[in-house]
Image: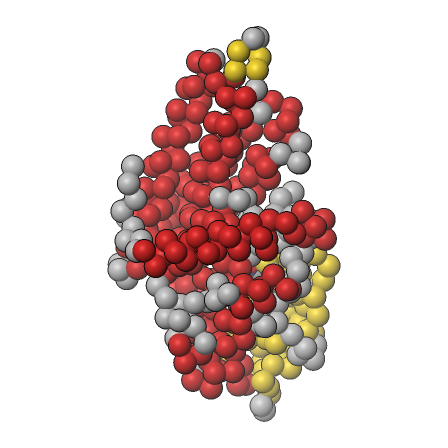
Length: 380
Ligand SMILES: Cc1cc2nc3c(=O)[nH]c(=O)nc-3n(C[C@H](O)[C@H](O)[C@H](O)COP(=O)(O)OP(=O)(O)OC[C@H]3O[C@@H](n4cnc5c(N)ncnc54)[C@H](O)[C@@H]3O)c2cc1C
């Protein structure tokens, strides 16, 4: 089915250049990054050198004012090579938009050029050991004291947490005001009182560093408050829409790759004197998977188009985030089954797709939280 997104010749040229970059600069190092549980900083810097980071940022801050499709192409090419542990989309399409939307001119001039060049790597810290889904219940506090906010508390599961130079941190400036008491701060790498834990071992996304962050009387300059005090929860809700669309895109791309790899494999692998592809079970499983992947692709593209047209699609994004992420993992699991024992071996890409699709229905809002939103939209 032809895709309805308005990809131009420029987009396709960009895709080709980025695809070459993926093959030359990411694929050869990925195994090592998985072993180290962290991507080399250098990879972000190279992305920046080629103009692959935050290229939607205004030209005055080093970007090229590109549209959202460029970030979607980057996600696609990373996804189609199963390199999901390289979290540049988090940097470019999830965290940098907080700075571009809510920072003042001085802050933008200070931070955005480094985000575009790859010298400053970004992360966002909402989740705490005691709360994830219930964001309004965070306990990290920020108390104003002269020219500083003093932060105390901890965060967990922070992607790019070890690499990050600038972290958008959610903290309570008014613990009595619930969601309205949350503010956002940009915490810089060497801020006194800020420490990071070890990388948390995970079942997938092995190349991605995920860690705890600790704030012990951490002195954050008042100039690092992002936007208005008390508006943090609203900002997070506004930006979660794009984060969830990025997650849908990643999931769909992984499912597409799983299907592609499996179709190839079942034509080659023989059992009982014929290729696996000749068994009706194989054909039906892959026909079902292909149908689901096509529906996921069509819905993902529709979300991207409506998001670019600034439509209010809270309901549709929530539906998509739940269904597409779960479907991608189901597809990965069914495809893995067709690889037999090889599917369970980590040197086979399908096993990586299986574990990397599993997280998609947990982060950026769990499937259950998405269903809470959808049912609210149904008036229930
Ligand atoms: C690899 C990885 C990377 C991550 N990256 C980041 C990051 O960069 N920044 C960041 O801030 N966080 C990050 N997270 C955290 C992630 O967003 C949270 O794990 C997620 O939001 C769920 O929170 P939780 O783990 O505290 O689970 P909980 O909130 O404790 O939920 C546990 C279970 O209860 C269910 N549940 C909760 N509330 C309801 C409800 N109202 N109705 C029905 N069921 C409910 C959940 O759906 C889930 O199944 C990351 C997590 C992982 C694993």
